[in-house]
Length: 161
Image (cartoon, rainbow, N blue to C red; front, side):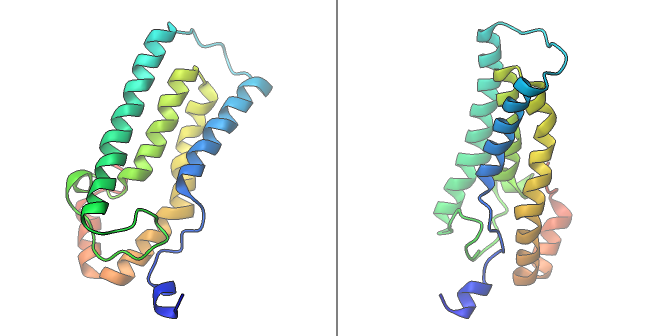
C-alpha cells in the first residue's frame, strides 16, 4: 500500500461490530457472576417480540439502508478505508453514525430478549467504546479531508440522533 492510500483513511483498527458482541457477552457473563436485582420476566413471546422488533428495525434502518447507500456510491463499508464523499441522505440526514447507533440499539434489543440488566447497563458503554475506537478517528479524518463541508454537516446533524 502506498503512502497516499495509507493516509487517506480513518485510523480505525478495531472492528466496530466486535464492540457490540463483547458488550453482550460481558453483560451475559456478569449475569452469572454478579446477578443484579431480580427483574420480572415478561413472557418469552413478548420479550422476543419487543427485542426482535428493535433488532430488525435497527438493522434495517441503521444497517442495511446505510450499507445500500454506501454500495450505490461505490464506497467500502469498512471504516478503515478511504471515503470519497460524505453521505448526507437517508439515515445520514438525522445521524452522522447510523451504523454505530445500530450497534448500541442491538445491545438494548438483546438486553430485552435475554432479560439482562447487565447488558442494558453496559449498552451506553458500547457507545463510549465506539466513540473512542472509531468515531473520533473517522471525524478527524473526514474533517481533514473535507474541511468546511464536513464541519458544516457536523453542525447540522448530530453524532447519534
